[in-house]
Image (cartoon, rainbow, N blue to C red; front, side):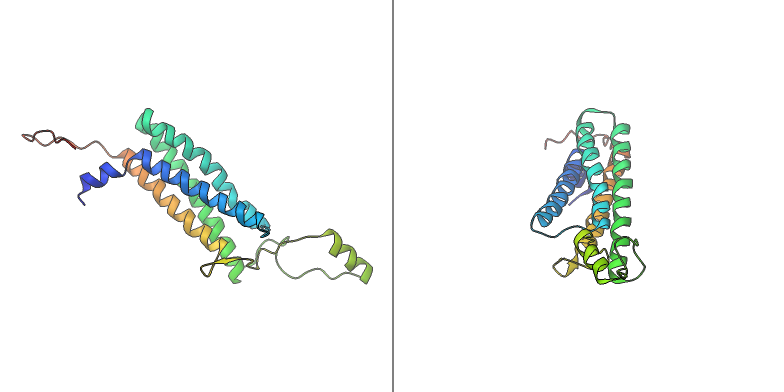
Length: 183
C-alpha cells in the first residue's frame, strides 16, 4: 500500500474513533468482569482513571477532527498520548506488583496483620474486605488484566502519537503537470 493510500485510510477522525471504541470497550470489559464477580483491587480501580478521562478526550478529539483547525486536533491527540502513557505506567506498575518485582501499596499487598485475639480476628474478617493487588484473580489468554491494561494502553498511546503526527504533517504538495486523480 502506498503512503498516499495509507494517509487516505488513516485520518484523524478514524484514529480518534478507533481510540474511543477501544477505550470504551476496555472499560466495558472491566465492568463486565466486575459484574461477573471479579472484584477489582485498589490498583485496578486506579488503572481505570486514564480510560475515563481518555474516553471523554477521545470523543472531543473526534469532534475536533472534522471541524476544527489541525492545531486543536493535534493538541487533543497529544493529550490522549499523555493520558494513555500514564495508563501504561499504571499497568506496568501493577503487573510488576503481581510478578513480585516490587512491592505494591501497603493497603492491598503484603501479609495480613495479626490480630491480638480470636475475637479481634473474627471482627477483622467481618469488617475488612481487601482485594489483594499482588494476587491475580483472573487471567485472559494467560495474561492478567494488569498486563492487558499495559498492552492496550501502550497501543492507544501509539495510536494517539500517530494521530498527532498525522495532524502535524503538512499537506502533500500537488505534483506539477499531473492531473487531479479521482478516487
